[in-house]
Figure 1 (spheres, chains in turn cyan, purple):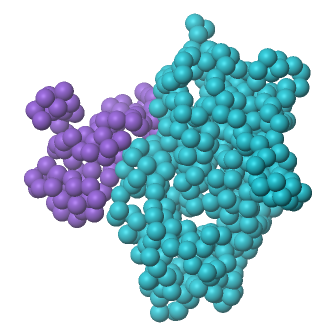
Figure 2 (cartoon, rainbow over the protein chains, first blue to last red):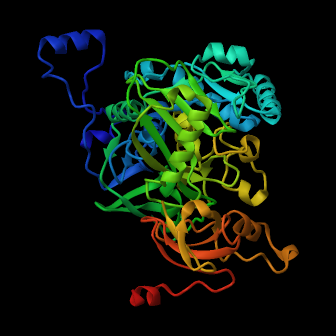
Figure 3 (tube, each protein chain N blue to C red):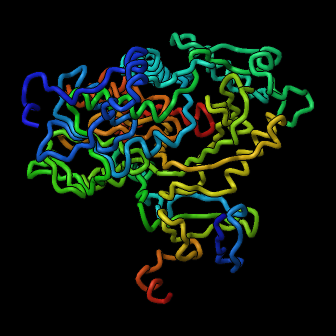
Length: 430
Length: 99
């Protein structure tokens, strides 16, 4: 532990994953693998504490160490690593947002997704299988074409498919003109797709721990302590007080509860967002399909399960369950667009607690409290942003100023009125 | 499925009959032109979002159509009580003592 004060701290030694190490360990009975990351106990003080060990928080710790040389960092998690929304989403990755600020932010994340497996030496199974968004009426057609034009001006990949092209791209799709919600075309982002969500958390955790970051699990943060001058002093946790001059909160649905302990009121409400998977079947579904009008989205995991989701429950809740009426609505929507699946049996469902802002855009930056940073408000679409949010949060914490990509995503925009109104753009939770 | 007691219909009915309508007891400013930007922010965007007891509006949209308020625990989703719009937030300690 004393070594942490050296210029280039060394974390634990870990096996480099490669075909060679796989073969070597196979031949020695798989008994010599090192642990993926150590389960750290808190030190008295860190340079930076990150609250929340989801993909965003772990990634921020990794980029702090790798790009800014700040390795005396702790990521503190109330449960287990990646057990919050990182492990509870439908793993969809895309960047076809309407407004310039959002398109640039999510496309930054997409650029980082591209090379992430190699960078982390961890197979996150990023699969660019394409995300197709269905248009069912004239309004959808006009709105998606507006999105496509806006995306193309921003250099973001997105294009229009006719009904026949949509059917060719996704054969299970029902394109009958007699359908209650006929498919009138679709927007396709080919760079978009899915990734293995757990692996994203594990990969970042391992790469961060390797650079000396402490990952402390089963340690709820109770409050943020501020000094006499108002600046951050550290956090009170279940394992005692931990000192740090910089604290970054990246706690998704619980962000407003934690921020309140520092006296910062947040424009957030927390809702359950549910998802469900079917029994595993042979590969049938080649892409991700979203239908905003019928309101559901679907893809097939590499295990063969259909992964299905839709919007949030209607009421504020921290239950991590959600209600059954929403599942019924979601499954009805899937059967409407894909009658082929109407006899599928569903295996399990779950809920994550998502923090939703009034304009449905994230908040990523500084706060009125010196030394306190926040990354929240990703609502129903935080997974896709993981590497981008992590990278920009690390930048903001290290330099005490936002990167130009997250500069518009301030907390102050709710005072100045300079909103980034993706809520109006999508007309549904997204 | 939540069962919600409509205080007008005086019956516990399935969640599907109701529409959620956000946090309760947020009064529109009496003199809007006097408000600072911070006060507008608080009125428009800041919500208490508690992990615990939440006072919230519901509308019996597929029933009597009227708005009412409810006290609900946001962790267990259990309703403590519902009451007509316009009434002050009930005292929780009295409610719990009555149970």
